[in-house]
Amino acid sequence: MRTIYPKLGEKLIMGGNKETKAYIPASVNGRTDELLNRYYHGFKKIADAGVQQIIENPRDNAVKDMIIFPIIFNYRHFLELLLKKYAIKYAKDKKDYEELGKNLAHNLEFYWKRVKPILEEVYKGADFIDEVAMATESYILQFQELDNGSFTFRYPFAKGEEFAPFFEEDLHIDVVHLKERVDELYNILEYMEDQLEHNRQNEEYF
Image 1 (spheres, rainbow, N blue to C red):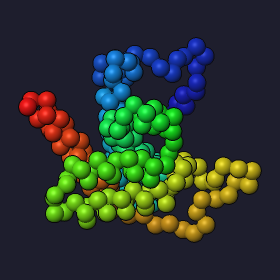
Image 2: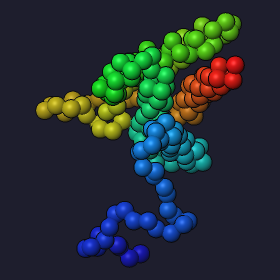
Image 3: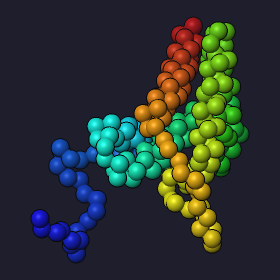
C-alpha cells in the first residue's frame, strides 16, 4: 500500500462534499444551548462507539487497552458539559450566571452542587428522588475522584517537572458497566430538563 505523506499547500479544514461534510454553526444569536447539546452528545456518541467496538472485538486486547483512554475521557467530558449546561441555563440570577462564566473549570463536584437543587426541586415529592439523587451524586463524585482535573485519561502523567504517573497500580475497567452507569446519568439529567421545560411552558400558558 502506498504511503501518503503531508502535502505542501494542503489545508486541514475545507468544506468537502455533502456525504462527508459536517456543520458547526456560529456561536451567535443565543445558540449556546444548541451548541452545548451538540458538544456533549458528540462526546458521548464517540465514547459509545468505542464501547461498541470493544463489544464486537472482545479478544482484541491491544485495541481495548488503547481506546479505553478516549472512552473514559469522552464520557467524563460529556458529563462535565452536561452539568455545565444546566448550571448555566438555570442559574439563579445574573450574578450567579456571571460567576459561572468566570469559573469554567473541570471540577464536576462544583457544577453538581449547582445542579443538585434543581434536580431535587423538579422531583420534589417523588418517592424515589432521595435515593436517585444520592446515586447520581455518587456516580459524579466517583468520576471526580477518578479524574479530578480532566487530565488522567488525556496524559499518562500529572503536570509538573517530575511527570508523576496517575496510576501506580493496574486498573481494570468493564466498559459496558461504565456505559450503563453513564446512560443512567444521562437519563435522569435529561428528563430533569424535559420536566423543567414542561413546567416553564405551563407557567407561560397560565
